[in-house]
Image 1 (tube, helix red, strand yellow):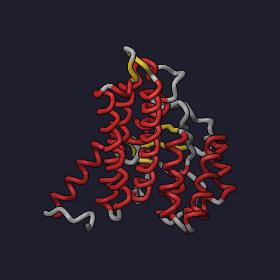
Image 2: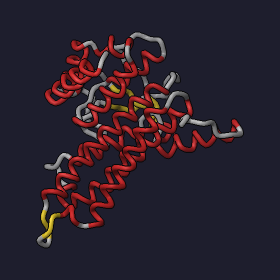
Image 3: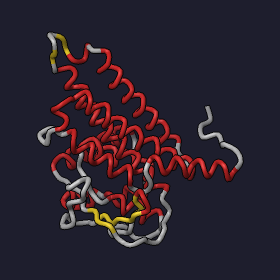
Length: 261
């Protein structure tokens, strides 16, 4: 797939995700050839599709497909997913189960402990999803800072506001670099952890920039904040994965080179 084809695919996916979510989006992506793209070009399918899910705040049970494919099983079904704190959840393929405590839009519910499957590809997918929702939050906060006037000055002119936006951008760019470089178990652990931490950093700083309006249900920020909290917990939170990566390094007795410059 060349650059032009990838751009056209991205625009098609963005329009589809803007128009539908949940079960309807799952069906629409199946019609667009999501399963074939995942099987034939996962290096394009994961960053492109999951980043756009974050940017549009849409959702679909595609994480199931990523993990099933990595385990050599047919896509289109579901499987238990490890969640932070030792819990396990199921991401249903219909909208009937929607209404979790953290994100009422997601059809997640707790289940007994499931059979372990390879998680590396799923963590990369979630990392791109977290990155997308983090960038969406940054866009909302930046636009508010540009448009809002306080004390006769644009909000964006205040240094404290600019610092929060800059720190968010640095965190998100760093997470993206980690996702691009991840190519082994340790790399995927660190990439998911970096993306989770960056998205939560974006939620905290952008909430501060938006002020009171960011706490209201009428503003879209709260949807991204809730989504980031759930996605960070899936397949291990940033805190848990950082500890797991540390345990791997201690067991190995050295820190491998993650990126060759």
